[in-house]
Figure: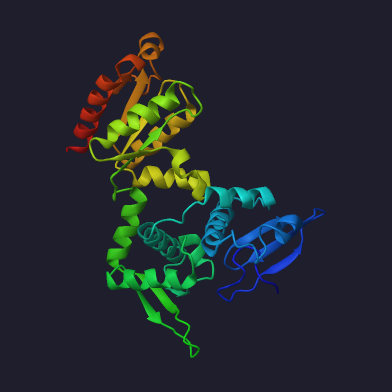
Length: 320
C-alpha cells in the first residue's frame, strides 16, 4: 500500500500501485480518486508532494476529473508532466458548494436505486464524485442536506473523533429533488449556447455581441469552452444543458453536435431558441426538422437589431 499520487491519501485511504504495462509509468488504484496512471517523470516532478504549486484544491480537481472519467470509460490515460502543468496554469475550480450538494443527491440516489436499500456507508470515492475538496467537507454537505429534510443518516463517528455517517437514505423530498434534477427542472440564471467552435466569424460575434446582449436581461450565457476544464466533456455538457434556464442553438454550420444538443434540451423540455446567419438561412435553410421552428437570424451588420429580437424571444420563452 502506498500514498495516492493525486490525493496523497490525506483522508486516510491508501492506494495500490504497480508498474503500468511496459511503459515508464505507474498504475494507481485509489479508493478516492479511482484508477489512473502517471509517468515516472510526473511522479517525481509535478505530482510530487513537495510541489507547492499543486495545491490541495487542484489535487481535488484532478481527483474529481479522474473519477468522472472512470465512470464513463475503462480507458486509462497516463498523466504526464504537461497535463499537471496545464492544470496548474489553468487553475480550474471545483464545482460550487451548491453544485456539490446537487452532485451528492445524484450520487446517493443513483446508488440507492441499485437495490433500494439505504447506503450502509458512503464510499471513499464520495468526495471525488461530488467534487468536494475533502471527505470532511463532503460529509458537511450531507449534514446540511439532512437539516433541509432531503436525506437521513445515522451518525457513526468513531472513538477517534472522525466524523462519518451510515444508513444514508433520501427522504421523499430528496427523491423529488433527485427526479427534478434529472429532468432539469431546477434552472439557474444561466443560459447555454451550442455552436460550432473555431469559426472566425461566429466566435467573435458570440463573444462581443451575443453574450453581452443576453447579460442585458440578467442572464449569463456560457458555452462548453467556458466549463470544459472541470471534468469529462459529455458529463459536463449534459449537466450544463440540464441546469440551464434556456438553450440557444446556432445552426449556421449545420453542426451535428449543435443539433444533438438541441434535441437533448428539447427532450428535457427546455426552451430552445434557434439562431442562424441570415444569408445561410435565406440560401439553404436549416434541417427540415428545425426549419419550421422560430429562428432568429443574425448578420454582422445588424448586431443590435439581432440582440433586440433575440432578447424578446428569450423573454417570451421564459414568460418574463
